[in-house]
Image 1 (cartoon, one colour):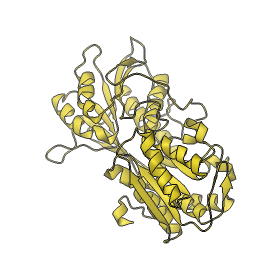
Image 2 (cartoon, one colour; image 1 turned 180 degrees about the vertical axis):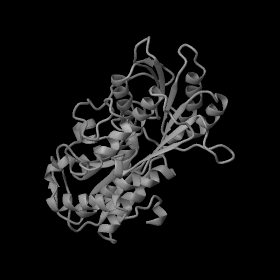
Image 3 (cartoon, rainbow, N blue to C red; image 1 turned 60 degrees about the vertical axis):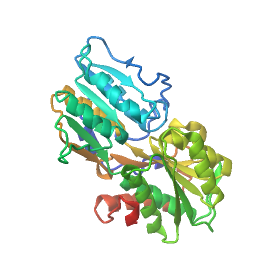
Image 4 (cartoon, rainbow, N blue to C red; image 1 turned 120 degrees about the vertical axis):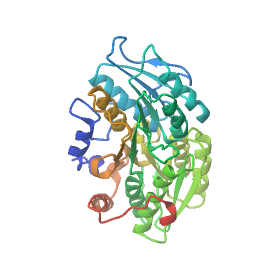
Length: 382
């Protein structure tokens, strides 16, 4: 087993069951057969046809703000759709919003279409929830998927034409915090970064502050504090998932204030975190995809990535729709126990980590799965 896959060895059966047996997302989070950034330059409101004109199943996908090419959340969703295209007879169209205010109109553009008529509309990201509430009500016969949210009506009930897919992000983030906490207490150098044994300071950069992104923060803080209660985690929410300059500024301030390692959950804003890490000669932890691959030019400072299997969520929904087993009004939640989230060591730096830290993180992962560690999902409970 390679060191980069030490955390993903367990739970393969669980993820395979979710993805089906017809070529869905691999349980190995190392995307060695993907090209990372999508390079898609289509604008919000534009429609891109990816499938054949005579496909039996039509799928529309509305991406999160930040768009394709973020090397993170949206690209992971696209990977799931592409894998579904390889497995099934599909026609797919995608829309990329520039602003949150565009979600409703883009969702409705798909829902109102009759040529083609969409069998499934996939909405990527929790910021689509409010718009989807109105769209789902307006189009009660249309099936929707939403990733990262469970929208409810005025009676606090799930919409009966929406299937929700969520994750236990705090579990994977706890592993990131454990690794970072252990490293910041040690003198470690690899690639373009280093830590100092006299440091007890880490950083977290979030995108839009919300209960979802706070799950990343809470898990990271809890994992670090479990190593040593004296470890402080600086936190900054930039308010955007597509502002690398803000990410760079936030992380630079943290590194200047003594942080050895900064973990981001900020989409394309996180690219700026990696830039700041290189400039400061420190380390960073990526999110959603293996960013040492999708942001290869920063691989010399990316220790690991907290991978979130949005690809599995998208693929599973499409597969269920194709097989007439799509369950609306339901929520599927993925965590460490089924490889829905996982910590993947960096392509360049993973092999340099001390064996003792690798072993401790692996042991911690199993303890979470076994229920021996209860990971908080709210920073106020850390």
